[in-house]
Amino acid sequence: MIVMKFGGTSVQDANAMQRVLSIVKSRIPKKPLVVVSAMSGVTDALIHCAETSHLGREDAALERFEKEVYVPHRRVLQELIQESQLREPLMKTMEENFREVRTLFHGLSILGELTPRSLDAIASYGERFCSLILAASLLEHGIQTHWINACDFLITDDQHTKANPLMDLSLAKARETVVPVLEQNEVVVTQGFVGSNRIGQTTTLGRGGSDFSATILGALLDAEEIEIWTDVPGVMTADPRVVPEASTISELSYTEAAELSYFGAKVLHPKTIWPAVEKKIPIRILDTFHPENSGTRVLENPRINDHPVKAVTSIRNLSILTVEGRGMLGVPGVAARAFTAVAKEKVNLLMITQSSSEQNICFVIEQKAANSTIHALEDEFEIEIARHQIDTIRSQDKVVIIAVVGAGMKGTPGIAAKVFGALGHAGINVISIAQGSSEYNLSFVVHEKDGDDAVRSIHREFQL
Image (cartoon, rainbow, N blue to C red; front, side):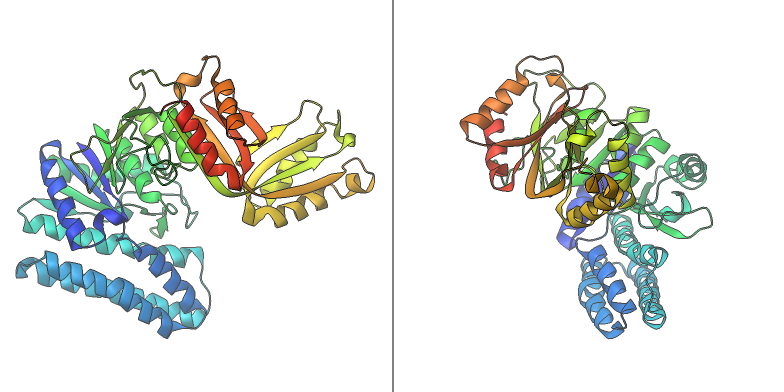
């Protein structure tokens, strides 16, 4: 069997769903399990409505819900489902779900409180609405289809809005609910992004979690392949908005794909890859709007080509923080204390460098977290600052991380020389540099104004 996941733009309206129907029909011999996201924009609308309701503005929330959730789903249902035997019970089920959401908004308005648990309950409805319509559409086209609630088999921990799967429990539930249906040669339709904890409360895997759901299911069911259907032709050598001549990469290793997802290539969610890695299941990224294209295949051992560098990507809206002082020289524990202070602020470190003199530590974080992180570091090193052991804790905003990624970089001489030579010819100054011992990724920081030129220069240098 295979797992097929369709993103929000792939199911955004009736025309898009018709394309999905055609694609699923072409995969029937492979026994597909179909995972769907919410229609494009629906999850954002539901979350906004929840936030508006708990502030006491229930009328405003309901108005937006009608416009951006209720009406679009009714329209798609009416355009896609013509058979009354399917349409009437589906309409009844959908109306019941719509009433449940309105009731939740009313409860939030009365309580004036929005908990992560409540947010998960509301956000999960987008996937439920969409999957119900798609399942009915497949049935209307004569395809034996079974709709299954993801909460019945994807069991997670209790971290609402960012839950983690409990694989052993999920495997047992999947064998009870999903496997018997697949054995009957029926197409299974379920939801991405959504699960439940051990006591049955709805949880979500976090934004972008539908891809994660697909690879979890692929791993649980030993799928032959996991297909991620989206609105791009695959993983590109660079952002085509920055580099118009960027091309689709035919194959990537799991490690390369993970590096690219971490450093700004948003085709795959960063957590998506690891369930497939453990079972060595290939992931294919495909374009719903051009299904004839082969896309990008992510697997353990891709074919070797002549390009040591596969892609150049970037992360924007960052700040680089520096902790500096002559009194840090030879003093153990300074880095540990700095990172502990940052961790208490729940700030993610995207890149870290330290000079060999030990007189400064630099790390890159999201720009929006810079001020609070500086205050946390100043509190941590208050005594050292007073003694002038630490001279400064400063932030440089509006910087960009550029990441040059490729498994072929490992052991290949001259990669760094070509990268920095290209930047030198373009007159771009490098603020900070980092490369791990794996050599799969060379990362550096430049000013925001130089970010696009840096990507274009490197892309051109390596003839990607």
